[in-house]
Length: 187
Length: 391
Image 1 (cartoon, rainbow over the protein chains, first blue to last red):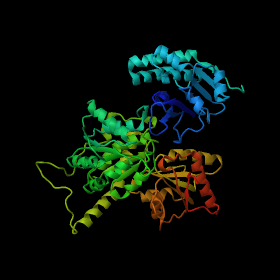
Image 2: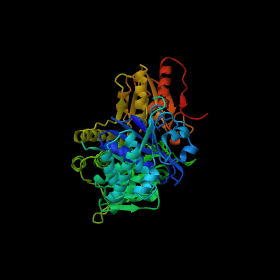
Image 3: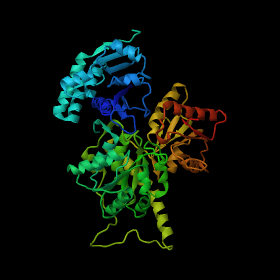
Image 4: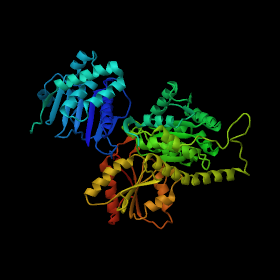
């Protein structure tokens, strides 16, 4: 089973990306869960969302405490919280930033695998808005081919319509191309 | 069987209600139930569902409207949680007494105060004696499947009583998970049209819900009790038919790993999914333990429960609600009353956890199994343990 934690700020779409990831996995024949950190929703406040993907039925409904993958949509969160808390040493940290993966390692202290893409820069360029939740799924796909990109693309169009959906898919593909990966420090 | 799709359980539940061709919905939004009636109101507004949607000013009015619409012969649905269920309580008692087959989804949520929107079984416990059939679903698939089942059983002329389908707020209601929808023809085969045994009709006037003088009140209430007890047979028939048509097996009491286990926990709702991981963890330690989950809470399936527990030597009773000032909490009280005088006499330990949204980890459940092992080995174990409470 692969467990995910998404970090973002209210309004950035962290919950939506967790949902789309889980829905893609189910459409791909797997089992999945996606859920928000339950509680009041406030725009701009730090939010978390969770997902699980497994080849069979999932037998837990606890929160995710030791994720395999953490995806960070807003780099400013790394200054106020430990985004890598509980992340497995052999896991994956995907971060939206214009910094290098080496700088992210220094800022977060995470010694495992790190993938970065300038999600906001790409979203501004391709979509014209600083909404990078779908964009950053491209970086996730590059670092770990968890779900087929075409299935994810179909769900993105289904959710946002052809016009906005296709722009998001283009941004996701650009992030896929641009993603830089730093392997785990211990090899 | 339909292909699984990734969908929020609440949305799937609303889609299932729509597939049952519901005639009338009256509801007031309350977290965490809101998505169900929100989605139904969208389906009605978009013309995808031909039903009367009555937005009301309170839950008391919601259940009153459901009472009237059901009495007029409409297939009727509503949903609520926590304070909403409490506010409608007066009418909740009246609907089964009038033998009206309303179906209500209850996204289980803690009761105020302090205010909590999060999940536990406080609201479930509060409606035990209302006279409704009560099913407690484990996951999103079961939420979907229990909608056609609830309408079929409620409307069966041998039952003609309302049903609540409980499911855990947020933990299930807001979860995107893999759910297989039924095909429309499967719903049609499983669920016959609603044929009310008595209805409000201007051409054939009747009075319903009238005064019960001392000469008839007692008999009326006993008849209601008997009808509720007798509905268990109808639920079982419907489970058999559901398996035949959609291929999923449901039982009034569900068991997990009970063919080998002499140690078991009894629990209701989605907790049993997390408990399955604890069963696996115990197996890795070389200890066989199991889960017994009453899916049907009212009528309580006594015989089925006793059959499930027959080889158990150490039994843990897991509550997610309080009976303030009581000797035991609600589920434990029920189970101990079932076991009293029965040939099966396991050692018993009681647990409470998962209150007001307190997360339950696999380790918490492993810890409860550990207590049962200790008890079986003759060690002293507290009669009631409050698992996960901060001291």
